[in-house]
Image (cartoon, rainbow, N blue to C red; front, side, top):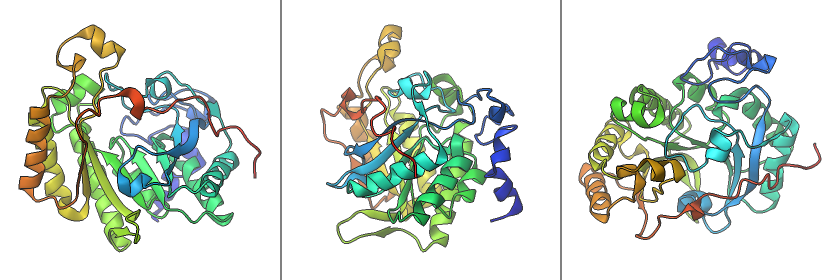
Amino acid sequence: MSAADKNMLSAQAYDACELCPRRCGVARSAGRAGVCGMTSELRVARSALHFWEEPPISGEAGSGAIFFSGCPLRCVFCQNHEISSEGFGLPVSTRRLAEMMLELQGQGALNINLVTPLHFAPTVREAVLLARDAGLSLPIVCNTSGYERAEVVRSLADVVDVWLTDFKYASGRLAGELSSAPDYPEVASEALLAMVQGVRAQGGREVSEDGAMRRGIIVRHLVLPSHADDSCAVLDRVWELAGNDVDLSIMNQYTPNEACRRAGGPLSGAVLDEEYEIVLCHADDLGFERIWWQEGGTVSESFVPAFDATGVVGPEL
């Protein structure tokens, strides 16, 4: 790890925070909230088995998902708004986070699935190392929006085994309109390239005999109503950057939240079957060998777990 990477993951990174692409420079360690909505105090909204990820992640046993509070993006269609922008979650110590990982391993989880964790990257890395010292043997999954600094991705290569990353937009205009991040396509491209390089350096994709992913990358893309053209452009970019070094997950589970329903327009409805088929066919035409897709009728808020602090409170190591 380079000296710059070590500094990125030190506790001092919270003093003038540049952990996410916003690089807001806020003194989170002094109790001020960054653009992500969080101070340096680690907050977690849920720690439990999760069965709704892609088959290589959830399998039948379930993924050990830990949901972190806060998010650098502000997606107008967000389904996790209670934790991403409204701040729900309980404060936990680094040791307690490590203990949650061990508890999930004890419950039979296939992996430890860290959901939107990288605005807490220094603390998360420390917790993973602590858990490993205490007996954690499961793969670590980093479940991210894709809006991450490549430097942070590279600095976590020694603790992250699987990247479960979104690639939301190819259009900067659309990314600015829907997520207040016009630089999203460029940032996500650099982050994905860093993920690919890191996994290659570790030996490439690896799955167990039962199909569970031990190391690799799954790129997720949520098809949005009336935006199949941008979805196809996203797939073009992912193919150019990674080809078949990644699994591709194309989702049709878009569900309008209350704000989108009130606003009306294309985002107030569901994705049409015809739109989804266009995107699936384009992925096939590009040559992706491992494509995950969803059957019809998946539009439902049942994919969103209850953010009720399940599994968060407990004794420390």
